[in-house]
Length: 340
Image 1 (cartoon, rainbow, N blue to C red):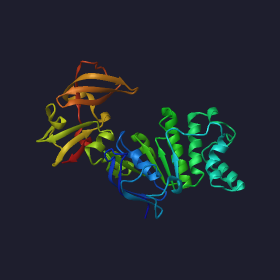
Image 2 (spheres, one colour; image 1 turned 90 degrees about the vertical axis):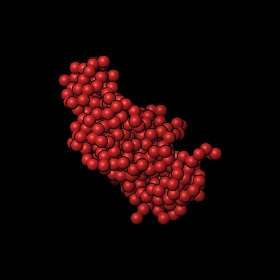
Image 3 (cartoon, rainbow, N blue to C red; image 1 turned 90 degrees about the horizontal axis):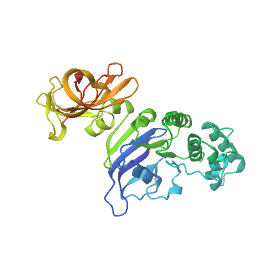
Image 4 (tube, rainbow, N blue to C red; image 1 turned 180 degrees about the horizontal axis):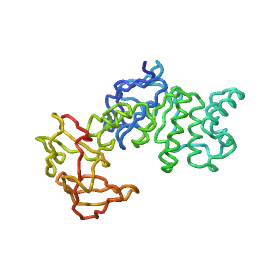
């Protein structure tokens, strides 16, 4: 049974055109769903509507059997964690976390017990007396998370909460968020533009484009079997080409073609990830536009009859320089094929 339901939701700002149109979404209790997509796709707008920060133009939102479509934000029992942690700089960790409970007039003994429990859950036991300015970005993010969790919301919404952290800390914190979510059984909606983040954390992922859902699937199916060109490109199939008459063609009628017999009947589009395109050998040729050293491998951008193609070669074998003519290979057995 669905715990959170969005039905035919339409959203927009002021007199501007509709930013989200006809959106349907069902979220199970205890599920972590990511809203994934590029800037302007409607993911943050959708999250803000669930929180009550944007009025619906049409449709309804139901949470735990209750229609919350017209309720003010403070009546929805929803926790929020934003990109900017919005901690009170003059309050220590304990008081930041306890703020929502004090507004709800929770008795002091229960308040202390709940605050100490959630501070321990986010790994900050012993930091209760510290001010935000005395803490790292990752620690501040944990305080913001604890403050949202301690009120025991029916739903927790997170909008790009890790975007201000460095790469290593982001990896650590996404694992920590997932652990906390599972241990506490929180239903969570997570907004991000980072596909690695969504893949690592989510039970299911909603890929949005132009205010609509392009695909809703598990991370595994989304990664291995995208159903549209947009999703394929967003999930790393950067080399996408039209396919007809046994040949690959540059998309939208641009550039030329390359023979490529053997793809399944009915294929209208074929795609390869960058790491699948082998540079240095193969039956196709291209000119090196640029190269980037990635440690164990080198990534190439090639100008070909199909337009630009991205591929890789092991660093030990990567000898080509910009301007060189090189061979490359498109392995048929690894091709993503999409019907018309």
